[in-house]
Length: 161
Image (spheres, rainbow, N blue to C red):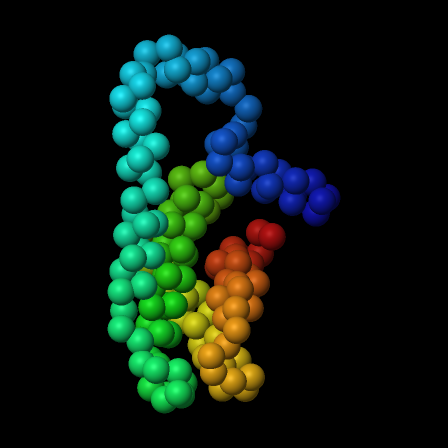
């Protein structure tokens, strides 16, 4: 019973299926291919990565303190990590809101849960930095496994996993 539920949840979360297989979606793709101009497709391909690129540039533009000053003077590093995890959480929850039918997430809940997930993840990274040392090598990679569990936390509270 639980395996079937997990399989159904997995199918529902597949972005390309939107919860079900559809011949209309395949036909719409062929129609788009036939009628969309090369200029339009090229512009979409160029513009789509811009938000991610701008976020990366904004985070990279933050002036950081020298490593020799230690973790306690590097608050902007953790603020920029928080912003990255916050944006990632907002995008993930926003996608879940539209693609997963049993996920009734309001905009307020999305912002709230995203802030909580980002704060706990960065707090975990800060704790590891204090324990292991600064700079924490591969810090984002190290704490990334925590983040998806926090994203699924609201769903686990409802008991639907």
